[in-house]
Image 1 (cartoon, helix red, strand yellow):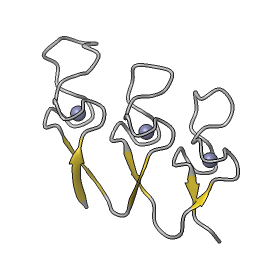
Image 2 (cartoon, rainbow, N blue to C red; image 1 turned 180 degrees about the vertical axis):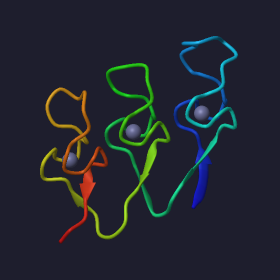
Image 3 (tube, helix red, strand yellow; image 1 turned 90 degrees about the horizontal axis):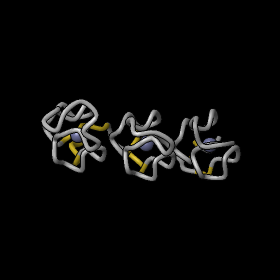
Length: 106
Ligand SMILES: [Zn+2]
Ligand SMILES: [Zn+2]
Ligand SMILES: [Zn+2]
């Protein structure tokens, strides 16, 4: 388990889009600016590590807004999405790699 800077709020601890109020705590890290991700991790391909869903102002559904996701084993570019982390219009994470962009080689 490793503590990393919350990608969604960039470590500020507040809601980056002020959806609720300017003082609302970041929903991803709860206001601490840090999140825990289990090692080994890779950058989330779906949101490109930003923690923000590409088509909304919500947290990324693939990494939950953390910007990184746990990936064990070997890494190979996902054949379903070509490493992009999403398939058609970018609204949903790829079903094969779940937004990581990489899959475990079998
Ligand atoms: Zn945060
Ligand atoms: Zn993500
Ligand atoms: Zn994929």
